[in-house]
Each structure stands twice: as structure tokens, then as C-alpha cells.
Amino acid sequence: MISGRLRQWLSLLVCVLAVILLKSEGASVGITYLQDAVAKGAVCLDGSPPAYHFDKGSGAGVDNWIVHMEGGGWCEDVPTCLSRKNTDLGSSKQMVKQFGFSGLLSGQQKSNPDFYNWNRIKVRYCDGSSFTGDAVDRANNLFFKGNSIWEFIIADLLAKGMRNAKNAILSGCSAGGLASILHCDRFRALLPASTKVKCISDAGFFLHAQDVSGGKHIEEFYGKVARLHGSVKNLPASCTSRMGARPELCFFPQYVVQTMQTPIFFVNSAYDSWQIKNILAPSAADKSKAWKSCKLDLKKCTAAQLKTIQDFRTQFLSALNRAGVVNSPSKGMFIDSCYAHCQVGKQIQWSSDSSPVVSNMKIAKAVGDWYYERSPIKKLDCPYPCNPTCPKVDSDS
Image (cartoon, rainbow, N blue to C red; front, side, top):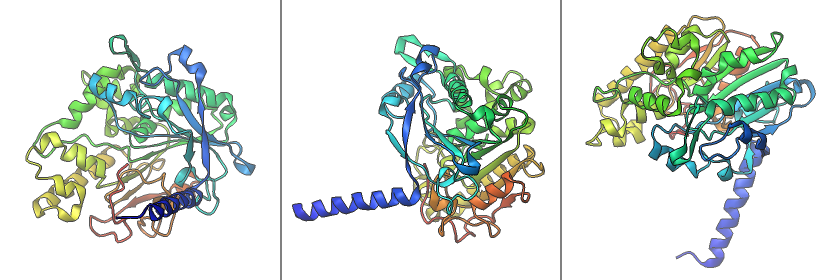
């Protein structure tokens, strides 16, 4: 048994370590609630106002902006949306008041030399549709207003100085990384022609693929999201106009990126941990739980499972190629072989001594070189398990 005094000391030590970690990763940034958005119907699932965290730029970065959209999955039906409604993924009332900025959003020059003094905004995610929804379910008091949230927040930031931006980046992780793809060209159109605008998608290139049972789990899932939230009309018209009777397939980046006009950079694992767990081997397609151990640790996969995972990587790279990412001079990529999901928001993966390295380059350097056009960046890692710089644990977020 641990004594009461020892328990107190351990608790104090944990608190001290947490503070040290927060300081080492970046400053804590307060939340901004957009109360005026409520009257416009731009609200979270529960009807509360949208929110973001804003760390203002300084010096040479005062006219440069990064708008980074939070991730957090999706809700595809009323029960799953109701379960999100009273969490920070469905209500700004449940969001933390302070948020530590690190990685791409870090305000420290040493760890984020290219973007540390920019205006850096973290947009909180509370709609469950990658900021695409436009519907209301009065019977269940659910508001599917993701697109309205995105439009209101961008308008608010334009009014606060982003309309004078010299440089601007729309980025995001996971569901937010998907949003950065879906909204990229619209973001470009809302800024002056003189502004240098690019987008970054971190773990947002979700693959349209069959699962291990031969089913279409992720296709059906995104279809439900699109129908429930009324998303189709807010997906890029350059994609939906080509998809005939299946416009909801424009939730998949491989069909959107083909016709994108704005430069974009993809940070992704070819073995994305969320995709392997939820697209390739979702629980619904693995009733016997044969994949349970493998999904938790690739070292525990059977030879047959590893072959399936390697085939998934091949499909992923093929989709990137068909979308024009590999050969387009305006598009960049950093595709590693780590079992990871979301890598630009954590200092340990962005630019630390422990960050993954591909072709002698870390993510921060790759993104900076691509944005400032110091060199073309098309980094592709060797197949798993070749990269010793990958984190030892799954960084699923």
C-alpha cells in the first residue's frame, strides 16, 4: 500500500512534470468563444457557440496566419451524435479553457523556426462532420452546422486582420486534416490574390478501401455522415460534379485532390494507425477479433496480417499517385512508415531529437522547405518496419 504522504508527493511530482512538459512544448493559450455565431446558427452539436484558441503573431510574422483545425472523428447517426453532444467534441461548454500549443503551432523559435511568430489559431471541433454540415434535428435538439462554424470563424479571423495576410496556411489533423483538404480552395478564394496561401493535411488522407472482410465499412460510414449532416452541398463542387449519383464519395481525399487548385502538403503515415484500426480492420469486419492484438501492436501481427497491411500501404500510395500528389510541383508530402496518426501537433514528432526522419529530414523541415519553396518535398519512407526513428508506441490521437 502507498502511504498518504507518498501519494501526495507522487501527485505533486506528476503536476510538476505536467507543467514542465507544457512549458517545453509551448505556451498555454486561452479560449475564445464566438457568442455572436449563435444568432447566425453557427453552433456546436448542442447549440453552444464555436470556439478557438488564438496566439497572436509578432515581429516579421505579424501578417502571417496559420488556421489549424482540430480532429476527433465523426458522428454518423443520432445515437453517436447524442453521445458526443455533452463532450468537448460536441459542446464548447465542455472544452478546456487553456490549450498548450506545440509542433506546428509552437511559439518557440528553436522548435518551430519557420512559423513560431505567425498568428496561430487552433479551431476547436464540435460538429462531427469535418466542418461540412448544414442541418438541424429539432426532435433530438442536435445542430449539424459544421460548415456554418467554419464560415463564421474564417470571417471572424479575416475581420481580426487575416484579410491583410501576406502568408496563410489552412491545416488540420485527422478529421481536421480532412477538413483542410475539403475547404482548401475555399480558403484560398476568401483571401486576397496577393496572399500566399497553402494547406497542410496531417493524417487526413483517408483511403477509400475495402475492409478485411471484403466489405465497404468506411464508404458506408462516410455516406451516413454526409446524409445525416447534409454535407454534400458543402463538399467541393469540383469533385461532386464528377461523381454522378455518388457525391458523398467526395469525403475521400483521393477524389478531391485531383482537381484542387491550391498547393497542399500531406503529412501521413502509410500505416496510419486510425485507418488500419477503422478502415482496414474495423471491429464490425473482425467479429472473431483476430486482428485485435495486431491493431494494438504491429509486432504482434501474423505474417498474413502483415501482408494485408503492406497491401494497404500499396493502395494508399497508389491513391496518392492517382490524385496527382507525387508528380504535382505544387503538392508536397512526407509519408513515413510509423504506426502513427497525427504528427504535426506534437513537438516530439514535429522537430525533436525523437522525431521520425525520412531521407535525413524531419517533418518540421520538410513542411517549412515546401511552404517557402526552398526545395520540392516528396518524402516517401521505406516499408515497415524499416525506420528506426519511428516512435516506439502508437501515437493514435
